[in-house]
Image (cartoon, rainbow, N blue to C red; front, side):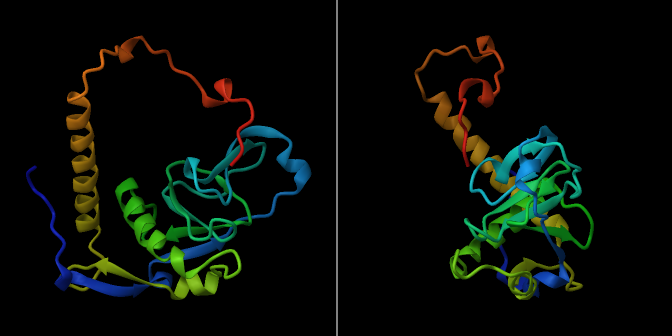
Length: 196
């Protein structure tokens, strides 16, 4: 693979989360409102499906390009959100001060956030104040600013490497499956009782 980005410890710096992100609380949804389905992606404290709980008939108040972090249940589980959404009060929303994160930037920070999970649990919730004061190791430029270009290239390389490994593994399989004949489907049409 050409243009591999290598980790260089000399160009990383400790930065508090509050210097990079605004942290907002999700909003409580009354039980009655949870019963009205709609089109708004709703994020709760889950470990799968990007934190998605259900689609509700409410306004998507949080913008794509942000990160949701569980503060309850699966404390510290982080997901990058690539579309506008609503977040419940079990979630904290991290919005980058620089503006919307790209997918690669979001996945990079989700990885760093997940490394902090072991410090918190259901009984020791990760409060907004603790989140803001959490220190992350971030690559910086020669001017001591966050190196967003490095983060993007680094994550592209990781994702490409993973994809290439998967493609290589699949090529070695002797299965004769024609995926072109598979119709699209929705999980909800196959599984009737999905719970997260």
